Amino acid sequence: MFSTDIGALFTSPDWGSVPDWLAGVGTISAVLVALHLGRRDGKRLREEREEAKADREAAARERAEFRQQREAELTAAKRKLAAQVTVVNEIHRAGKIRYDTKLLWKVHNGGEEPISKIVIARREMHPDADPLTTLHAQWQSIEAGGIREILTPFTGDMALPESEVQFTDGTGVRWQRKDSGELRQLAEDDPENIRVRSFPIPYYVVPAEDAPLNDK
Image (cartoon, rainbow, N blue to C red; front, top):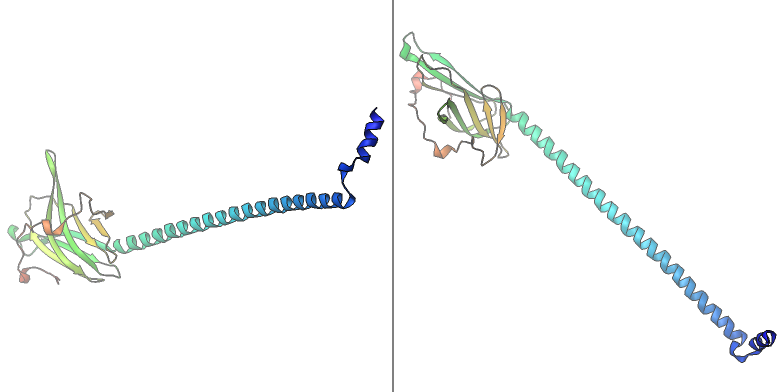
């Protein structure tokens, strides 16, 4: 029974002719080749996309690192220039009489670039009140290497006050330099940032013939 079925199978006309077989084999081969090429091309495309993504991420990291390095260099350069600005206050006696004693304020721009919107001030600490900030002088600008001096009233029983100078550098950054040497960059909304136009000057300007001024 089984052998008869096998013989019938091979003699069945449904198997087709040799050309049909060859055509079928060719079609299957073409499909397999197409699938292989598709998988290969798809893999290559994924690899290219991954490489392109990695390149973009690497470029973005390099740009971020360059910006950070550049910002650090600029900040260091600004701080170096700002550190050349100093403020000093000292007792100045024009004579032997007590009421001739005054306080001499001196601001020196030792940097290589001009500074602007200069303010010298003193801050007094009170245990039962907020610190009192007193504005003593202001100048629109001081050239590179320039010095500004001014005398203000001083009584012998006053402790020498802590003083500071605030100024703006050539890039628009605001700085605070204290006579103790502390240097700090000031943000626009910093509570210690003195708004020059909101502070009247609370002292009597010493006549030019009595003061060693170099004001411009």
